[in-house]
Image 1 (spheres, rainbow, N blue to C red):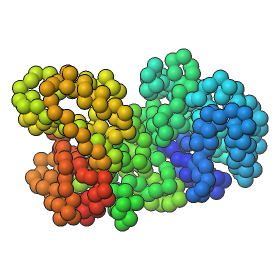
Image 2 (image 1 turned 45 degrees about the horizontal axis):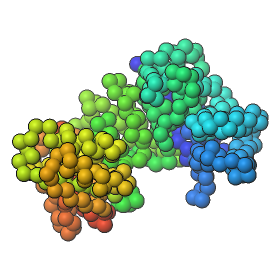
Image 3 (image 1 turned 90 degrees about the vertical axis):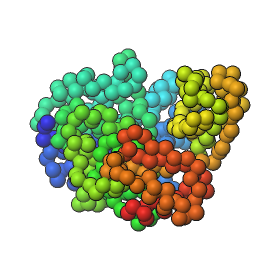
Image 4 (image 1 turned 60 degrees about the vertical axis):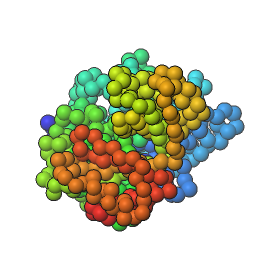
Length: 435
């Protein structure tokens, strides 16, 4: 592994000249920070616009509405250039943007915020700009092509610093492809894995992960350390500090991720490590609590379903046919509950119930809406008696009814289902039981 540190800065860290100067100070404070990955500029204040949102609007509109968006973009970037003292002609940038929108190349349009921000940051830092369109390779499904990316980044001279736009790469046909929102996190992980970094730093406007959403529990403690697997569970269930796919390029490496705060650079933040590097923890302790609202539970009842070979496969096939992703599938001897996101099943309930009868019947199908799922995560829960009971008791003491419980065989997470209206109360109760 090299001694290089890959740093990624989010939109809040790049929102204006003041924030970018903080980024410059952070990068220059450690010469090992040779690869800098940037997002598009975010909001400068509460009622401001993110550059990516403006670019999405630009791509969707035409005529006068598009011109109005272009003027807002020009003002935003020209102000940034003037405040930083960067001499960069924006005319070619906006010609490219216009041509891409005219061709319906949405991915290219939306990626231009990261592109231009990287150009600006590279100029201020005195680093070399490296376009992701030439160095972040993707396969035909839009997933990282690590072998080719490693080769391309390995060709860069080792005596320089580089700034790379996040959020996009190039497909085998050489066309630009963007990731899902927050995808600059993924770019940082790809670069860190490709260059064999000592550490991947992800800088944002919060000092690491909290045990639960501070909007629910304002006093939630910082998590000093979390494993890749624990992070995956937390992000899947709603923790939004990092992109949910960020760990995949780093699996099998010894590269830790450190979440840090651009506005509090001395704060140690949260470090994310592989299972083999995790510190010793108290048995039964948890790392975090995450959750989401608005799920629907479809309960299927049929006598002796446990004796029917292929029953679960037929149920899953019905949901696949209708393009509905299954979140969880707890069951009993004669019952099977299928948990799906409510917005994924809208308008398809009757058709799904009909097909379940046809493929698996005769069955009884019941639907329950307004469910919230809460996930309690921690590797130290495994093989420790009483953790699930503690979770359930804390919720019961707060007078919340648990409608579902699901625990995987790995025992690093417990998921309970409660009514939407009881979500915050249940999270408070579980947090104060374990914190």
